[in-house]
Image 1 (cartoon, rainbow, N blue to C red):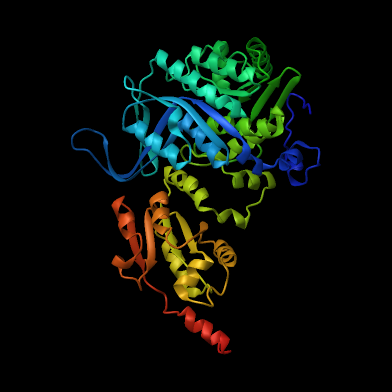
Image 2 (image 1 turned 120 degrees about the vertical axis):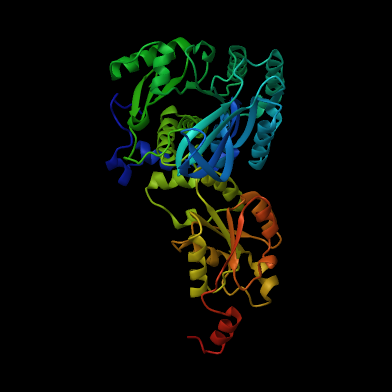
Length: 510
């Protein structure tokens, strides 16, 4: 499919009822469930993004600066780690190759990778450097200052040997390699050339998110994905217009022997430059942009996965363009989720998107927290949903920004309540809760799993009905140990489900 240089490929008319052969129609036929079969190596500069949230209501008496009273803190993977976060959130299997220091930040990185189910063995620990750590202080939801701690000198020679050893094991089982270059010293020219040479020999595509002025080390990669400013830096001049940009991009593509150059242009979309022509993809719909940080990581991740699934750079670019339009509406570096891609492709929000697996929520909740969201968690049977449940859920949701409800499995309810329960099976209970506007996400869990869920999710608030004494609330110690709150919600009325069931059986309901 070839578009003219200023074509769209995903215009508004096409989005409502696309033809089967149209770009959007072909995108909708991509089987995203196959992402679980894709194994990708991410090599590059791994960082830790820290967020300190607080409020400001006074000026320091020591200097003319604001005083931030800290309310909470969170951390997430940054840099190449954000590419990993996106890949993992989409269900792909990920391996890593990077350089960190022997410090607390590296240990936190290792724990975060473990939380995603990713083996951190590909990280090379260098005692002579600091792990890159970016700490953002946000006061009243606005970033007040960013503190960077890092070492930028090139990786030691031993790292190249580490790369070769890891590639001997990894490359034969990989479907793609992503190089996430933040110019922090990990991807030296020698390392980059070794990665590209070895991958190309086995026919494994290499996608590069580039940095710096000299792109010569990227020669032979499959696709390089600079933004407009990075492309201008690479060619050494600012562009006067579209045609000059395309000509410079085509020249760079040829010199580097690339299959394609994908130039991201923010609100103007993307330009895909290939030997057989140029395709322009505009951003699909106007959006309120909160934060563009991490959008390039999302583009690299989604483009790579879609390229593996389809084998077509244009389809891959179109899906990456769509995904980038979603992540810029989030605060902080946040991954794209499969349901968000599906919803964007079909321009609808499905009720089913509220129903998540525990694994899915373990990926989502840290992202919500980095966006400044206060997460409230509650759990229960929720059999025969009644007005008391509604009032309880409304009061719980009022304590934060996101309400997550965990529902006992049918077997758990049976053990807790006896034979004949639940009246409604877990699927019905999940769907009814998901239909409530006050509930943001709902999941199902088996008896005995609650402590593990709380340890994984780390909600800011755990709620329970006031018919429980606080010391009897399961998981209370876990939540309070990491600084969370346990709140007892006053009951709206004393409703006995067992009594209701008996009334219904006796024909006395009302």
